[in-house]
Image 1 (tube, rainbow, N blue to C red):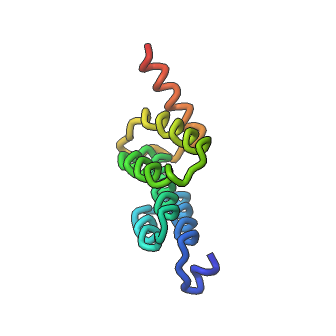
Image 2 (cartoon, rainbow, N blue to C red):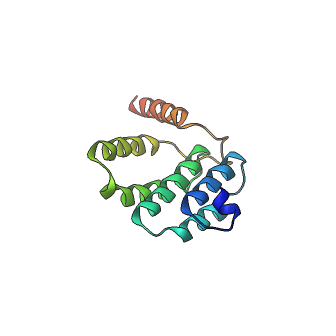
Image 3 (cartoon, rainbow, N blue to C red):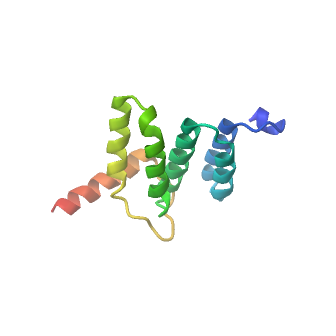
Length: 125
C-alpha cells in the first residue's frame, strides 16, 4: 500500500483495495475497474476476475458466477492439474448457490461450500 500512497499504481495494490472495500462493505465496482485497467497479463486478468467473483459470491450477488467463470477460463491454462481440478470442483459446488436479493451478509468460503453441499443434498431428494 505504500506504493499506492506514493502514487505508484500496481495491480497487487488494487487487489488489496478491492479486498479492503469488501471488508468495509463499500462498493466494489470502482476498485474492480481500477484493477482491470492495470492488468497486463493473463495471470493478472485471471486473479482479478477470480478475486472479484469470490468477493461478490461472499454476499451471493448474481454477477459473481460470471466473473468466477471468466477467471477460471483465464486461469485454466496456467494451473497445475491438481489446482485445476480443485478450482473446477469448488466452482461446480458454488454454482448451486442462488443469488439473494437483497445481498446476504458476507460469508466465508467454508460456509458457502457447506451451504452449497446442503443445497445439493436437498436437490437429490
